[in-house]
Length: 149
Ligand SMILES: [Zn+2]
Image (cartoon, rainbow, N blue to C red; front, side):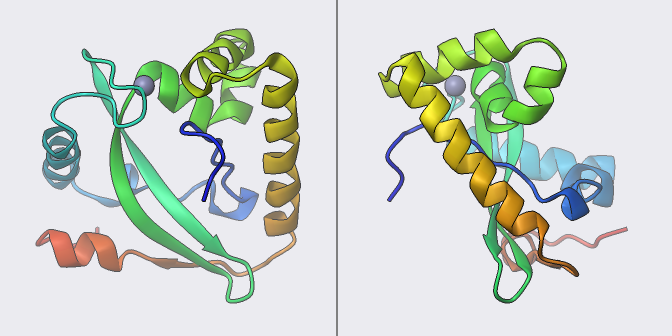
């Protein structure tokens, strides 16, 4: 069980190029995306914000078996999505906003933010040592009648 409602998801470097968004046809991605928004009641799944939503691919990582598994596609607001991809967000100079959103949604202090980020980074470094990640998208195949391109 995660301590916080809004967490970081640091993708292993080797998997950076993998994105459903790029693997699916625009029409299929639209189907997946819109389904996520509908399931979320057109609100951010984490903080409940209404307005423009983005689709976030949620993966789990099994280091022992080098298995990257798609668990869900989540409807998130832009602010929550930026926290999920904190490394990329910090590189674009929006790290402070992401930190503030993390603290607000999770009701935690700045020290706790840094502690959580450090823990996420440790997990990231561990996962980065694993080679030959295999991708499991059973979730997608079971849910949608979709063919990858
Ligand atoms: Zn949100």
